[in-house]
Image 1: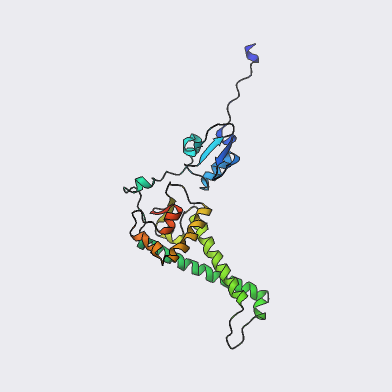
Image 2: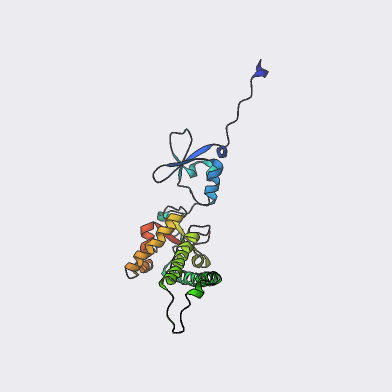
Length: 237
């Protein structure tokens, strides 16, 4: 009888299905749609990320999947559009000021962490054993190295955490209304932020010409921006 025919089973919501995410060398996943939703919110994947539902034979852009496209932040113009003024690139002087602000903030962080580290060592009785004599002899090299390593790690963490975070900018850039984008409009991830910081070393090896390039290149790019495919633009996220 017709009444004995079970009703058709509705298709699963895309959040309940499993998806692969195209990685640099291989597919990552599968992940549920809910995981992809969180990855979009954390800016780990963006409009140009390619995904494929389990069982599909072709990849598609995340922006072409309606349920995920609705979760994406407003698209930033690509480099070609930016060149005609839809995006205002940040020039040399405003970025220099942002850098100075970041140096000051980092110094404050360093002083605070150094004070905490000194208190911890003092409470542990370590400093008392290596207290320099009245003649003003320096601390042992091991302690100098310890404070240097802490400061080095703080600098890396500062740049990676803020540039790859929600702001996509360090506090100095944020204060001046700037943020970083990739040339394709994708958010900057932790590894790219780390690579961008490493590229600063090359800027220094060029006697800082790599930084000064910001003043005369068309898209206000320093050597580190060119190497890592990033741009610094006006506007807060």
